[in-house]
Length: 528
Image (cartoon, rainbow, N blue to C red; front, top):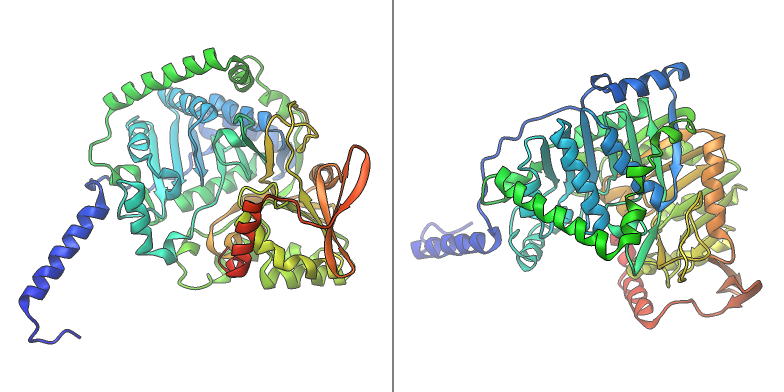
């Protein structure tokens, strides 16, 4: 307690410091922007939604699914859903990076809003770094609403002040909305591992992520609409207008649209091949074709409660996606295949995986190798568990860095020849060749306990077979290293030029090794 006799100047100085800190960290004034709740519009509100309902009706509650493992198809699906939407578009993402693909999607979103489609965009606050004004400009459109999840209140003006602001509330700031959801007319949804950015759509010259999305049609989209509404109406979601100093302006939006239009014209001139590749949805739409290829099956949309991020310690189990997934994890009896870009099992995951393997389950895991991962520190969190997993018969596969000069397309996830370096970003689970789970969830403590996630569990041997085929492609010795134990030490088996060979030193440059060693040394896996 402060003594009653304390010098009043102390209080004055304290108040002044607090004021200066607020000015330093605040960056911009806060507007009193109304925050009104809203709900997903019913599918029956549009002719597109009604056509989906009519298509789904004979399947008596089942939903239709199609994998989108190819980056070109993944981009096309998003663009075509914007063009087909008539009443609503609901987008929920962890990361949005500027680039040609993002600008093309934003252009389509603006055109959809022009024709009366309600657009709701919910971004994790980390996606807004340096973009507050731009996002607020987009929200100047009367049919576009943008909210930030778990936003930083202090220090938004610069990167430095943001970093300082986050230091004041680390326990909350490291808990993020990792969900990826694209929903059109509450009728068709896309879930999976892809964020928005050129690296997710084979449109970046130096790095592309290998990923899996799931096109989901019918009742499951309505379930995912409920998940979006929970996050959108959460007290943790705040309008972008709360964080800018000027009012949302249609005039500013008009100027921004002219800049966007000019940038797309310039990109079309300077990189005609890439532009045409991305814009193929305009001249050769595929959504109607895909609708005839759907696999109809029983399913369950799964998601974490948004209040998960408020837990002071480990969240209550009833808030967790993993609790919903637990019955299928525990009942697997023959084969378990995991694809997890960032794999850190922790003690709980280690006990589960080794227990399944000890019970006779064929457990196979595909993750990134040290040389391929975009986050070497996470690999350092995974490495300490590798030997124990192998000792119990868990089969590990680590995707190699895949440089090359050719690009390709088709119904496959991995390419033997790629235009750029590739890093695995996929998240999927396949249970007993019967059920498959595809979403934003990595098999690590961060996805399990700290970040929020979303995905769909599908009960279909046909879809499971397709997902399994993709996983086995990645596990091929030409594309992956297979760690094995040899005289108590880990070696890496692989294949080059038709010849199998064994490496005794883990592939990866010195910088990646240093990052992995550091995270391993400090026990970073406990924070991942």
